[in-house]
Length: 97
Image (tube, rainbow, N blue to C red):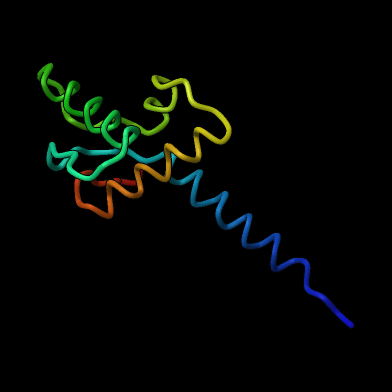
């Protein structure tokens, strides 16, 4: 009986590639609303809004946000998921470089 183990590796590699693409992206604030958002989503929106309030562009590279929040490991994955949720709700836009 033949079991294809390569398929499992390819799925995890695909997820890793998507994560790396997201880390190299820029997050742009579209609207300043945090209704029905979790704590992490609120922190992300607040961080983007503060950047805009200081007469800067409301766009920050994800890599810089990870560095600012000092996130690694499991927390990093939760942070990237929160950014994806914000994009689904049309609160932020992810622009790939």
